[in-house]
Amino acid sequence: MATKTTKTTAKKVTPKSPAKTTTRKKVTPVEISEPVVEKKSASTKRSLPSIRVRRSHIIVALLGLALIAGLYLLRNYFIVATVNGQPITRIEYYEELERLSGKQALNSIVTKNLILQEAKKQNVSVTNEEIDNEISTISKNLEAQGQKLDAVLTLQGLTMESLREQVSLQKLIEKMVGKDIKVTDKEVADYIAANQESLPEGTDEAQMKKDVSEQLRQQKLNDKVQEWLQKLQQEATVNYSQPQS
Image (cartoon, rainbow, N blue to C red; front, top):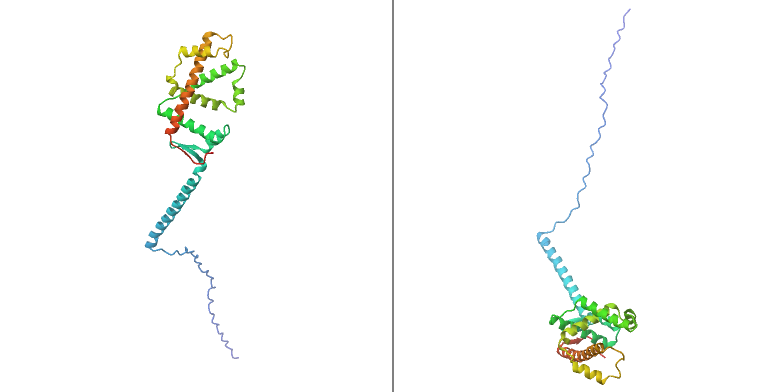
């Protein structure tokens, strides 16, 4: 019996290729580029600052001209007069106007400035002590008449501050004008003889002579002050910014 030879055909086994590995693609980060700025030429860079400066100069100049023009137009609103170049403000004018009226108020301020200027020129001054002593004397005289200083000030529309100013001006005038004023005994005797009926009775003779002497001195001072002020006004340069009625 014949033996069947069985050929075993070996299957060609193709080796399996290794499993494909999935490789991740490298993601390159997107670079955000800066905005492209157009470069300006050197000449442009140099010209820009100069243009900016010119504009600022023009603006400042225009503002300056506008301010000067405005101040010039408003000058008459703030200044009502000048006394030897020294301005009198409208505020000062209105403050005085509260007690006086119109031209009289302005003339009062002008006169005050003339007195103060002349006192400065002559180097004459008044101390607070002198003012206090004078106000004390005024207060005592009023009390002797049964009146109070505060009540009298209120009645006349004055304040203590305004009284001190008036006393200061009076003292300045006395020092500048009244230093040479004298009253003789004969003048006192003549006045008493001529006004015997109007003089208060029962007054001490020495006190009466003292009072009459002071009264005569005050009259002489008033006359001399009027002449002195008139001379100051004639020699002064007073310019009014508004018509005087």
